[in-house]
Length: 120
Figure (cartoon, rainbow, N blue to C red):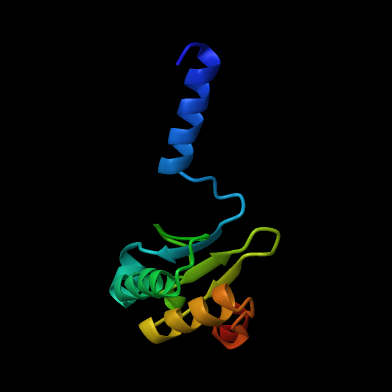
C-alpha cells in the first residue's frame, strides 16, 4: 500500500466481501414480528435459508424484517427480484416456502396461488 487510492481499493474489496451489493441479488424477506413468529415464521425462515443453501443460489439473500402490516395473513414472505415488482406470499408454511424458492426464485415462475392477490 503506497497511496490513498490503494487504501480505498482495499476498503472496497473488504466491504464487498463482508456486505455484497444487493443490486443484482434476489432478496427474500420474512416477516418476523410477534404476529409472524406466533403464526410460524421461524420455521418458514429456516426453510427458505435451507432451500437456498441446498440449491446453491449464491445470488439470493434471505433476511427478516418486522411487521409487514397484514397480521391475519402471516407468515408473510416477500420476494424482491431486481427489475421486477415485489411479490408477497401469505399464510406460508415450510413446504410452501421451499416451493417458492424452487419455483419462483430458482425457476423464475411466480407461485400465483400463494400470493396476497390470491388470498384476497
